Structure formats: C-alpha cells, structure tokens
Length: 417
Image (tube, rainbow, N blue to C red):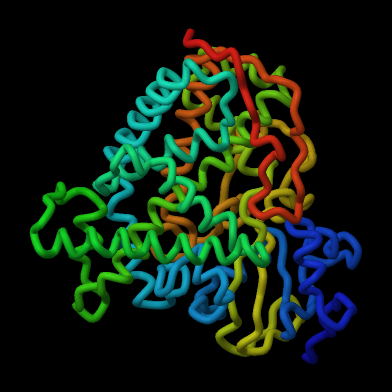
C-alpha cells in the first residue's frame, strides 16, 4: 500500500506564524485543512503537527518518538535546564522518572495541600495593609514557599520575592524574544548555581536535610549506570520540581478569572467537597491555555493512518487543542465543570501537562501536585476569603506564552470568612 500525501500547510516557513498565533497555531490549521495531522516548516525544517487523542496516543509511543533532540536550545537554557528529564529517553528516562515518582505518594499530597492552605492564610494575613493583590504575583510567592518547604530547600525570607521572580522568568521566557529571553537565561544561571551549592552542601554534610525530602533524594540519586548524578543535573531536576510548582500560579490567575467570568459556578462551590472542587479546577485546566505544544522527533520510519513519517522529523502535539478537540469533548468552547462527573479520562484525551503514562511515559510527574495545589487554592478563595474584584483588563493574548490576563487578576477589600 502506497502512503498518501500528508496535508500541508503551504508556505516557506511558519516560525513567525507560530509566534503570532501561539496557542491557536495548530488549531487554526486543523480547522482550515480539516485534518488532525499536517506538515509544515518551522525554524527552517520540516515539522509534523498533531492534535486529538488518537494523535496523542501515537505521539507518546516511545518506540516511534524520542525527546533528546526535540526541544529547542532556547527552551533547554531557560525552561527545562540542560540534561533535564524532559530531554531523556528509554532507560535513562525511566530511571529519572522513578526518582520523581518516588515522591508522589498520598502523604506527600496531604503535606502539599496543608502547606498551600497555610501559606495562603499567612500571605493574606500579612497583606492586610495592601490595597490590591494580584493573584498571579501572590501565587508566585506562596507557591515558592510551598515548594521549598516540601522539597527541603532552605529559603531565606528576605530572598523570597526575588527568587520567585527569577523562577517565573524560566517559564515566562522560552517563547519570548530579545531582552525577556536573555533575562530568563540569566535567571537560569543564578538559580542553577544556588541549587548546585545546596547539593554540594548536602553531599559534604554542611546542611542536614530530611531523607524524605527531594533535596536529599535527588542529591544522592544514582542514574541507570549506577553513577551519582553530577551536581548540575541534580540541581536541574530539583528546579524541575520547584519551577512547575511555581508555574501553577498561571492557573491560579485562571481560577480567579473563571470565578469572575462564571459567578454561577462559583456559587456552587460554597461548602463543596473535594470532588466538586476538582471538577472546577479540571475544567480550568481544560478550558484555559497553559502549555501550547509538546515536542518530539520521530525515531524511526513508520506509517500511521496512511501517512508516512520519516525518522528524525520534528513533531509537535497540540496540548491546548487536544483539550478542546470536538471529537473528544462535548461543547468544547463551553466552561462546564460538570462534564467531569462520571467522565472517563484516558492517558491521551486530557493532556494539559502532557499525556501517556505517569510511571514510564512522559506525562508530567507533578500533575498530582498541580491538582492538589489548585484544589486547595480554589477552596481557600471560595470558602476562606471574601474579596472584591475591581475593574481591570481580563483579556489575554494567545501569542503570549504562558497566557495570563493582562492585569494579572487583581482583587481588593479582602477579608477572612
């Protein structure tokens, strides 16, 4: 059987279109070309774009795709760090993933939930003199405190705000150009040095850390060959816990936006149990943008649905578009938390933080952490705090990655219930 021609996005190079359209780049072409797979050119090379749960299942087939050379250098030098788990394959990836998953038990989730609740209360108690609070900026501080306490990383109170800013530079800069990108690279260098110093301190016995904490576990972890991780890699992976926890602040902004845009849904959450709270935050994760794409390269020649995939081809999976794909979701453009009542999730139909297997695949190990942090934050905003929402600009740009409402979701006149 001869492979059919893959639909093409005509044009010499679509890099500028990716930057201009952002989250909508693949969705727009899916609609225009009426296909879940098409070929284009990005940054001077051929690329295949995929969307939808069937395509996601293909994308997370590790016998057909690899990650080690898929992420652009600018992403490694800001968001992921050099040598991070996101760029590994096969046994190296399984070894590193097991290190992360060893931390993700029920006891850890309970601790994170308790810390989130504690630090949100502390933040607003200390913010009583402030006229206005930005939920996005506040969450950066709160979640850094939570992340450091949970991982065992010492945090000097006087450095909290500056470190929170540096960490946010890592996920605010990969898609940026010019000054913003270089700011992210400078922050990456400073943060790497900070954590590398702590790894050395742990190994030399200069600081004591609970053996159940990530700082201890990662400092003494051995790779698939039995070698101790070098301090640079250990530091990158510790930041691969702290950075994503801090990045949940993006979704806190979207929680605030959803509570404002859909007040009838907010009313249902008064006194709600964890299940109902989780429906709401899962719909926030589905409805609003977070990560636009995941990247990989084909590791072999193969055919899929009659199309030929050549080894070494850059391939992008549309995370945002898959979470809104009309084949997988009823009324995908409607905010409807109740859709998660009795809903059956697969590893491929709901992928705000990637898809596939938690234990052996490339699905984000921190997704459980994200859900706990968001659910606890939502409970706090609905059941522990009253506040007003001043007039502001709630719009966000779909070519701004991550997309955050322009005024960062401000609240005022806050008071504890």
